[in-house]
Length: 328
Image (cartoon, rainbow, N blue to C red; front, side, top):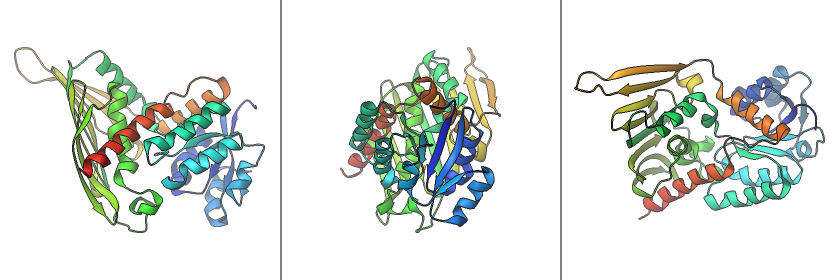
């Protein structure tokens, strides 16, 4: 093993070009070394960003490259498990775009392969690497706003393009898989709690794909309400409402593009009157770079990756429970 992680990317997806490729390039202790794509046009921006980048014309050729240590997989959702397993069979560590699998039980083969090979395998659930979420988790653990009563989480954007993979059932499309992982997984991470049951699941579908979902759930000690949509104006917000105050994240999921990462903490004033507000700004944090650096440390230093496959499997379990409740 070299002193840094040599990365390859399977496929020239837009998100890899605009976000994860630059994050791998910028992260400490790593280097973007190869890309697999049959399109010279799609490869060009990657080569411009990383002079000397090797371009393989097939995924198999990249996996056979002995000078690649880790692979980032941004392929359509229905291909994630297959290529994660093939990458590990080739001796590569894997960071797979979310959702890693379409059903909770499909995580199990990847977890088993990880354990059998000793390789690092992770889902790219980037928000847990952002200090705003880590700070909120600490605030809730110490009951900074009193015992939690309810949590609300919303994430929406408008994407009516029927050709987009997010709107196609055969590629694992759907709002719950694309952004439901954030409104479910974010609350699970911050509270350290798991849902006891789904109370309601109102899901709107178009052409076999869930495009909007309103979900309520019972967590231990608090009520959850979540909203995701691919047919609404952009919105990102998470609120944790306690007995003596509330915590609001104003750009919880994509702070670089949606807005400034701000955590507002309102604490009730005894005897009435306006709540006392504290505002924390997280302006310089790049959660994608931090995520890659945590992965590099897991590979090079044999330390645990901060977000385990077992944790993200729990988010998929919640999504699966929503689909079951939807059909009741």
